Image (tube, rainbow, N blue to C red; front, side):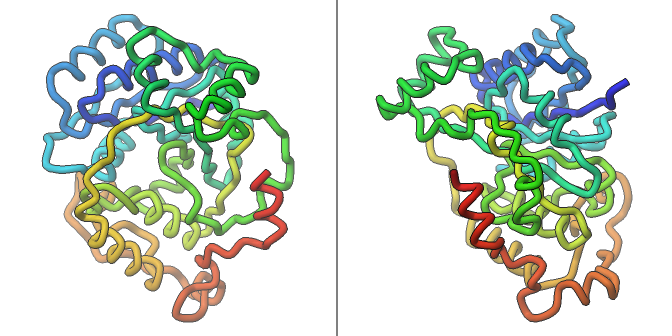
Length: 310
C-alpha cells in the first residue's frame, strides 16, 4: 500500500480561499493523504468552515489552531507536523488551489534524500474574485483556457501547468534554495525531524521557508525540482505586512553564515525544554568551507538555469 502523505495547509481568516483549496484536495486522484489545517489564529468563521468539511468525511482532516499573536507561520506549521501521521509532509498555502494530480505528482517525485520545491501560477485580482464568488473551478481548466487568461493578462504565466517528465534534469541545482517557495513544498518527516522543523523565531512575513531549506541542504537533503509537475494556482490577495522583514533577513543571514542544522525554536521546543543547537559534523564542514559555504551558494550551473527556465 502506498505510504500516507500529510498535506499541511496554512491559513488565517481566509475562508473563501481555504474552501477553494480544500475543494482542490477533494478532487485528487490519489486519495492516500490526510489534511491538517495549520490555523494561525483565525476566528470562528474558519473553525466553522473546517468543521463543515470534517463532517463531509472526504478525507482525514485535523484542525490545528494557535492564538493570534502576529504572523507565525513557522510555529503553526510545526504544530501541524507534530499532529501529522504521514511519512511525507506537503506544505500548501491556504490561498493555493491544487489540481487533481497534485498528490499523485508529489508521490511520483518523492525520493529519499530530496525535498521537492513546486511551482505556482499567480491569478490576478479580478480572476481571483470570480473564482471565489462565482463558483469557478480553475483546477479543472485545460491549457486552452489558461492560454486565454494569459493573453488577457489575468495570470502571470502558464508553463508551470505543463506536464514534462524531465527525468534527471530534476536533480540539477540540488543546493539552489533562493528560488524555492514554501507555498508548495514537500519534505519527508525524517528530514523534518533531523533539522527540528521550522524555526519559530521567524515572526511576520518572510524567510522561514528559506531558513529550513538552507538547513536541510546543510544536513544533506537536496532540492529536487517540482516544476512542470506540481504547479498550484495561487489566488490574489492584498499585500502582507513586511515590517519585520529586515529582522527575518538578519536571522536568515546568521543561518547562511553559520553551521547550524537544527532550528533554535523548532519542533522539540513545543514539547521539551530548549536545548543547545546541534552543529554539523566534520564531514559537512569539509563540504561547506569558507565564510559563505559553497554548499549553500545558490549558484547552480548555468546549464541548469537555462533548462529549468523553459
